Length: 508
Image (cartoon, rainbow, N blue to C red; front, side):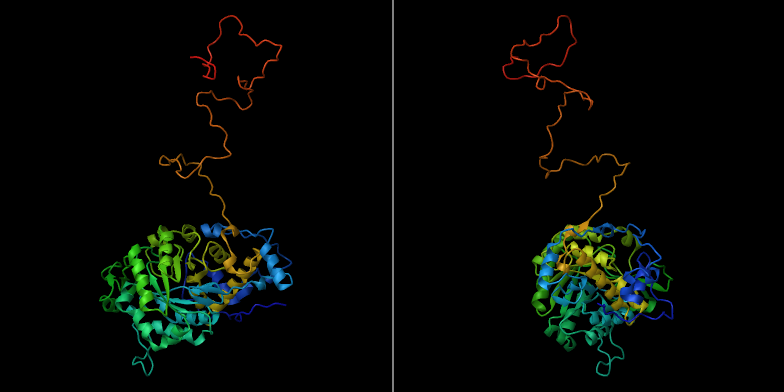
C-alpha cells in the first residue's frame, strides 16, 4: 500500500488565528494545514451513506473556469508503461522541477511577503523553515533592509536581535536539504539606495548559497496587488518619523490618526532600462541567479520576452489575483490583468516563467502550469497555513497540493509538470449578451483571409427568397429536348421583370 508522507495532523488550535483573508478560500486552506492530504478527499466517514458529485461552487475567475480535460488516447502513458514494465500509477509522476536555475522538489516556491507586518514577523520565519524542508525556493520581498535594518545579532553582531531578513535566511539555511531549494532576494528603488544586494553578496553567511548556486537576486518592477505602484505599509507615528528619511509618509488616515501610510516608489522602466539593469546584475553578481518580477501589465508578453532576451534566469508574473500586502481597494478590485490573461499574452515562454495569484490547490496550479508556467508561488495560502499551524501548516498544505498535482498530471497521461500543455485545458465559451448591439468601432479583421468553406456572396440586387421556395433561373432550368422548340413568350402584355444580365453573345 502506498502512503504519502506528510506532517502529523495538527491538534486543535488553542487560540484564535491572527490572520484573516477576505475573498480568499481561507477555511479550505486552514483545513489542509491541519489535515494534509486527507483534506483532498471528502470526509471518509460519509463513505457508503453519501452520493458524491460536483460541488455547487462559485464560478471563480477565468483560470478557475477552465476545465482540465484528459484525452482518451494516451501515448505518453504507453511510453511510461514500456519504461516501467507495468501499468503506470499517479505516484510515478515526478514533480522535481527546475525553478529559475534552482532544483525544486515540487513545482512551487514561497512568494515574497515584503516588509508588511504579516510578512516580516515570526510567521515569515516559520514559513521560511518549512519551505526549506520542502526543498522549494523562497523569495524575500522588497524593503526589508530599509525598514528593518541589516543586523547580524547575537554576541558577534552587536545588536540583541537579528534583522527580519537575516532571521528568515538563517531559518531557511538551518533546514535546507542539500541540492534543493534556494533563496531569492528582491530589490526595489529604496533597496538599491541601501545597497542590499551588495550587502548580501559580500556577507560570509551567504557564501554557502553562492558556492552551491542557490542564491538569486530579483529585480522587482511591480506586483499584482497594486500594479504601477510601489510598496505600501501602515506605520505608527514613531516609525513614520524614522522612515520619513527614506520613504514618503502620507497622512491619509487623518492628521490626528495614530497611523500613517508609508509609500515606496515603483521605479521607472523602459526596454533599455530593463536590459541595462539585467546586464548590471549579471556583471556585478555573476554567482547569483537573475530574476525579474513584473506586475500584470497589458504589455506583459513583450516585457517577459525582453527580460529573457537580456539573460534573466526567471520571469515572475504576479496576476491581479495575487498580493499579501496593503493596497488601495480600487487597485485590488479593478487594476491589472487576471493571471489567465497575463499567461495568454505571454504565450509559449522562451525561458523560465513563474506565476502567482490565488494559488492554493492543485487544480489552479495545473492550469497555470499548462499555460506555460514552470512553477507557481504560494503567498496568502502559505501565510494562512502557517498561521493555522506554525510548525507544519505549510508542509501539510504543500503535501495536499502535491498529491493533487500527481493525480491530475497522471490523469492527463503525463508524468512531469513540464509535459503539460494548453490543449490539456478547455475554456467555456463566453455567454452572448442579449442586450449588446453591434460594435460601432469594430472594423474588418486585417488578418482574416477568405473562408474556404463559405459559398458565393449573395447578389445584392436579387430579392430575398423564402428558404422553402423553389426558384428556377435561366442557369438552373432544364434544357429543352433536341426535338422540342424552345418555349416562346405568350402574347399579350406582361409585367416588367428584371433586366437580363449581360452575357456571352448578348449585345447591348
